[in-house]
Length: 466
Image (cartoon, rainbow, N blue to C red):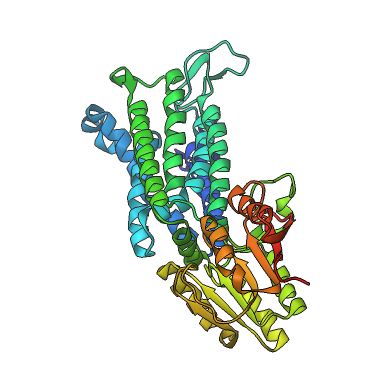
């Protein structure tokens, strides 16, 4: 083990000073550097205007002070006997004290950057895991007493020259913790990537970090040499249980709040914060479409990008005068249809959206598109929408439970050579698929099932065709 690295020896007369660097402190510095690079990468991928270096610097200051205070307050007798030596000793930094200091710093930083506390914690959790992993290597190299109980396992280690020396072969618990912390980082980083693709509960990453890190620390304490002080547990185990309980409470709360929000509103909130995110389709494979990742999407409710292209091309191919779209949602498919009508030089798409909050967002998008002359938008139910004359094309894309009713409602007005499209008709999303097949069995329409990731029905009514 190498508690200190000798840098230089200074001789002045008969006096000699050895200038050294503590390996524990050096690795803690590297821990903050590693956390900085992870945090900077996360800030960039989230598109935030936050200086990662400032966050790490402030957290480092608060964390070091908190870690030292927590350690010295665990042994008040030693603190009273030698306050200066206890406070300014190179050894003795408690991780939970450091975490409390960092949590305080992040609270203040969240207020400064106008983020919620959970948003800031979600952002910093992966960086904290990486920093912890690197910091534990500092415990190992310095031999500061964080090792475990004696073991005969082949990877057991002794620390004869450590800050807290032992000649026995013991569990190298800092290595265990570093490996687990690295795995927690990998998991949290992937969870963070999912929050960029679609709506996820704010605070979920924080809750999972507190649970996973708490469980890891609780378990490793069984083979650590820390004294037992609370119901047969070490102080670290007691704090680990608190961490798990708080993490579980956060998870339950944020998930319940998330599920209570309408799916459309979740996507709306995500778009407001992230904008339109173009990504690979992530709906599950189906027998008819085994590789959905070959398609692209914006969100889980807007039609696939390739379906939008198909709509646009279909409009320019069949030249409809009146198009009815049910379920405007974000207005993306409405604009694809309108682009086709503009290319034709005639026609109108009548689109309806029942939810006033979603409709307001769609209206904002449509009004700024320069395509309003081809669009008539209505904030009403598709089952109440009145259309004069013949409908040349119907794109049914509202609540899946309403699709069959919509087709039956507009079928009498459909041009005998018109086109009916029903989105979300894959073999996985059975409601729409079965509705289309039922209409076909009744002899009302002829159906073609297109094998897209979420499924698309292309149909035509039978009555009146020549």
